[in-house]
Structures are given as structure tokens and as C-alpha cells.
Length: 427
Figure 1 (cartoon, rainbow, N blue to C red):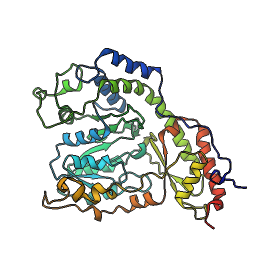
Figure 2 (figure 1 turned 90 degrees about the vertical axis):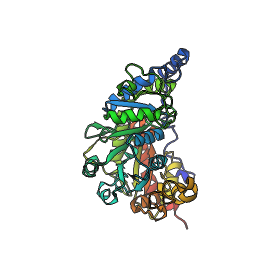
Figure 3 (figure 1 turned 120 degrees about the vertical axis):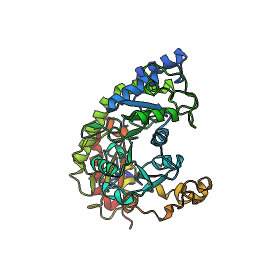
Figure 4 (figure 1 turned 120 degrees about the horizontal axis):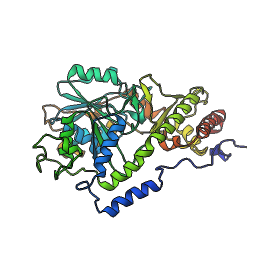
């Protein structure tokens, strides 16, 4: 008789997993109050300014600026860093597409530097050799909410006079040496879309201690440049920066309905983050005792992992040669919400591989606009490519909003599949 769920056996788990987002009446009331007020947009409202202040304070930054998406947060922060066309930004290849496409959108060039295979974050040891006379920014990604090794990254940035923009899309509440992620470099950019640890459907926020970055970000996020409100981030700007239409920009403002929902959700974030962190740490500890699957390395500088994604690595010992894809399929059949993560590195997608035709006139990487061209078909980051193909396992953040028993179910399912791996082998 088959033992595995994939072969008709009883799965380890049939109970539902925690759902996301977690919604209660305070969220409904917060949105309802804004709708009844008639003040739905940022201009004339107060909720966006309040959220900016509270989130910046939560992470440990002086300033926050709410925007329309995490992608917009990256693009606006890069513009605020005053990049010129053809400037280069160092990015990792294992991340969501917008980390790199935000660079293209501002006319700059993404330069891919491989990741540390035991953290999935930018490998600091490889950054310096990628720096040229056009490099202006390093953009580390705190992947899954696990803090990057920021000390050597900042040292390289200071040595070469570069700015650092932390892609903190996964990092709400995360900490490096007890400092909030997004506050170590010159600015941090967060996503607030539906699946993130702090969510409002579609939104984002930039945080910084630098008033000049704040000022340019305000200009680049607000096409209209309306009246300055007391207590808002605009009130921090020097006189003259409040002129209407002072720069070429779009409308990337956060609206009041999103901000009200975010304020309500922010009140819950710390408790949720503690839950995720406790469950994620526990699961990592249990997996470390197993054969064939291992957790990522946890360095001392990581003082809180937010576990937007918990990544494990399937090494296969004891699984009798079972392929990762078949292993993951078996885990899903046991009722475990797991995936293999990204199918390929960012630069393997058409926007980079076919840049000459996908990008308008190839701009900015093709066409010789800056006396040279970038050929991403020749880009090779072996660690990121191998991890996409072979080892990666993802568990999303809602998984960690449950109980320790939920984590034990994951471990039990892994052990079950290993013990009955021969049922899944061809033959």
C-alpha cells in the first residue's frame, strides 16, 4: 500500500494553513472612515502623512514617503540619488524583476553580481570587481527578510563614493545588528502589495535619513506638487522646492484609503513579525537536524529575520537520488505549501536577453548611447543559476503566522518523503 499522499496515501496535513491578509473590524472601520470623509486622495488628506511618519519611526528612519508601489519606491529613490543616463547600479540576480527593471526605467544600467549561496543575498566579496567609473549605486536585496551582510557592503560603498539603496520589499520589521532594515544605507524601498508582510493591495514607501533624498523623492513622486501641509514630509523641503511642476515626474502618490488600511495593519505588524520570526527560527532549527535538507546560514548580524520567504535547500542525501521537483511535488501532496522559487535569474528573462528589441531602441543597454553596450547573454552568475535549477525551496510568510505544530507538520512531511522516496523513483 502506498504511504505517500502523492501515491494515494493519507497526507500528513489536511487542515488549512493561515490565510493572508489577517483582517478584522479595525481595518474595515479605518477604510470606512476615510470613504465617509470624502478625502480619498493624498492632496487634502492626512492619513498618508501619518503612515509615513509611523512606518519610518517603526523602522528607525527620520523620513518616510508613501508611493504607489514597491517598484515606484525603487525608481523614485534611484532618481532621487541623481543618477545620470548610463550610470551603473550593482544588483543581485536572484530577486524579483523590479529590482533590476527599476534601474532600466531611470536610464541606468543594472550590473549583476552573484549571491552568497548560503544566504541568497548579494555576495559582498564579489562587489568590488564589478565597480567601474560609471558605478553610482549598490542595491542589496534583503531576500526573504534575511538581512544582507551590510558592513562590508557599506565599506565598499564608502571606499568608492557610492550610494546604497536597500531593496527592503521583504524586510518590514527586519533587523541588522538591531537596526531596522532600510536604514543602514542611504535609503530603503519597501513594497506594500497584497502578499507582503505589511500590505494594502498596491503601495510602497521610501525611508531615509537624508533630507536631500527625501526632497528629490517628493518631487519625483508628485506630478502636481500641491500645497504643503503642516507636519507632512513636504514641510521638510527647502523653500522653492514646493513650486508646481519643477521636474519631469509622474503621479506616484499613495492615496488616503491605502494609508488608512496601512495604519490599521501597521498596528498588528510587530506581533505578526514576532510570530513569523519565532516559527521560522524554530523550523530552521528542526530542519538543521535532518538529512538531505538544510536551512540557510544565520549570521550574528541578523538580529531578526522577518521570514517573508523562508528558503531551505534540498541537498538530497538520504533521498535515493530523488529530483528536487519530484520531492516538492510529494511535499505538496502531503499538504505542505512549498514551491521551488524563481525558475531563472533576472537576466535570463527577455527584457535582458532580447534587450535590443524588447527595450525601446535598446535603450539604455543597446544602441551605443554611452560608447559601449551591455550584452546580458554573456552574463553568468553561477551560484544563482545553480540554486534556481537544483536546490531552492520556498515557504511563504502566511505559513509562519500559525503554530509550532504547523512547523512540526512540515518536518514530519519532509521525513515521510525521505523515508518513502523509493515510491517516487522511476522503474
